[in-house]
Picture 1 (cartoon, one colour):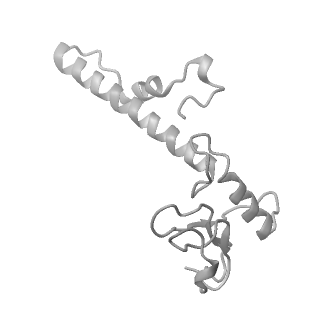
Picture 2 (picture 1 turned 180 degrees about the horizontal axis):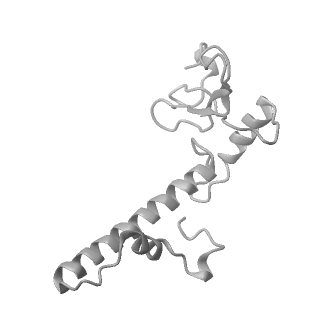
Length: 145
C-alpha cells in the first residue's frame, strides 16, 4: 500500500500500475524484483515476483522492468493490463489445452482397451504424441487463445 493515501490508485487506494520494487525486500545477491503492473479493480493488488536467471541481452534492470511492464499490456483477451506478461499467460493457456488433449486421449484409450480386450494397446508416449500434435494449418496461429 502507498505510504500516503493520496498516492493510491482507484477507490481501494492500491499502488499505481507500474510500481516496481527492486531493493530492500528482494534477495541481496540475485537479480529479482516485484512489479504491480495492473490497476486493482477490486480488493488489494498483488504484485508479481520476477527472478532473472539468465540475461543474454545484457538488459539494464530498468530496461528489463520496462519490457516486463509493456508485455503486460499486450494480452489479446483483455483491454487492460494484466498482472503477468502476456507470453506467460499464453504458455499457461497452451499447457492447459495440451493437458485437456491428453486427458481426452487417455480416457478414450483406456475405454477402448478395456472394452475390446485386444493386445494392440499403444504405449502412452505414442498416445501423447498424437494427442498434442497440432494440425499443419494451425501451427502458426494462437489457436489456444
